[in-house]
Figure (spheres, rainbow, N blue to C red):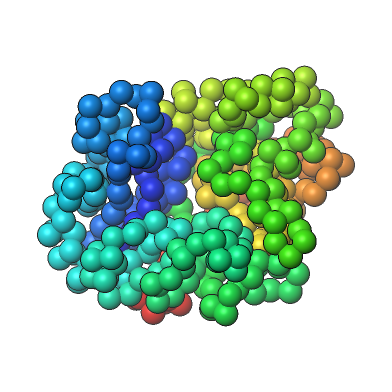
Length: 381
């Protein structure tokens, strides 16, 4: 089979295993199907944490994170990390160019790859959007050119182009896809008594205003559900990456009954992160305001991993119900009352919802189904 290339920002987020799994489920899934895979990343001095005190980019924690993550996933011979000055870690630039030249396509996550020579070497360049709404609106506002230079466009926003979705298509044809999960890496496990999740309070993007609508972040939505645990008969815990400047919000969540776990510990490596998800009763997923207001149909890669692990998902509604089965295993909410009702339904029949969760993953997120369908629609089979 042909080589499939993937580009994305793994090294820039050391110690964030959930983010790493986004790329790994694609890479491992393609390899499982028989494809040779190539992962491209870049790391520049300006991307490093100033407090780290690294003597060079090559010796930085970020570089070590990528090397260790790829090796731990069994992909140690499949990546090229581009450094300042033309240096690389992993495959050489020449080797990366050779593999790109015989690839069927490059999946460029959020337009991350900026190297013109490498982009030109790929016969087909696909912009893969995993944050639906941001890139499209930025493009409409003239704030980014990240969509330029691509031959096709794919998104995990299942509603793009559908009635009621306010994400602008920009005259492009967007291929929609669910997030793939290599199911054998995420077996169903019966364990746990808490609703959990892992996430950032604000994330790397700021709010966006478009056509008179303010599209916010997870922080703006989470505040609406600060009291949720007080109304439910189970513990709620989130491994929340929240800045000390938002200490008042963190205290408000604790007062509402949320347990705040340390994301630096829980997402420190692939296995610890997976064990945290699989040790849960269910996931509670609160989305970014962008996803909620735009009705783009976003559904989290993390939630897909919960489902595969046999963990029901209680997810804030972004419009995904038109494409995914909702009611057992996956429940949606849009206000406090429906969130409480969803939690109570899971608590009343946890085993039934656990079975349904795995069945949804097998039907809608199995990489052996999702990835061939995506390649076929992109013309890269």
